[in-house]
Image (cartoon, rainbow, N blue to C red; front, top):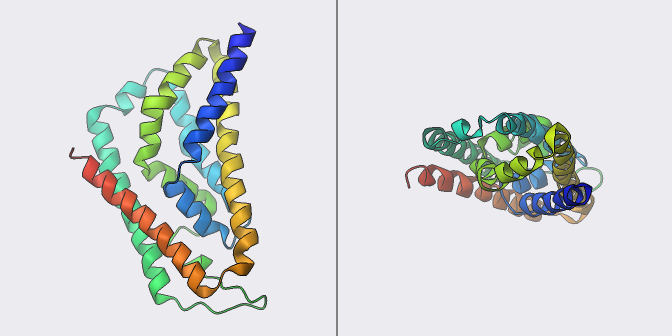
Length: 215
């Protein structure tokens, strides 16, 4: 039993990493926020956990099927899609209207006017809560993992959570540090291009989620 539980935790870690590494809204906002905050990724991961940890508890207690009912999922798609579209539009508009000036180090900084919440932790909460793909992952991948973890009782759920969340933390912090350290090579044009791409990622997912609600 110990061996099978160990293998389960390894598989859970591998599955969690493949999920978190898929490009999406969280990746986009992590890159955008990390230009001016080296540890934005860690704060975003904490915000992500604010939504994710209660969701794990809810699924474990057997209420997951109610939350993921067809009517609730449709609302999540529409509200989340509109929220992502709005944030993406604000980010894109900021890139258009703001004229960045180099600081003493020669770097350009528009991090405070990109249209995202000023707090990286709040950004993690908002983007996670409005990301329909996040809920889809828990429907098709997360729920089976929790069901398997529940076979080992409460220790199984706790250890699963302690394996899953650090995958988010490590990946987003890695993106954050890489982005922050590379900013010395970013010209104003490069910065605006990167932020514009991030904006269109948010807008694209927002449109897709809203459209998917009626399929």
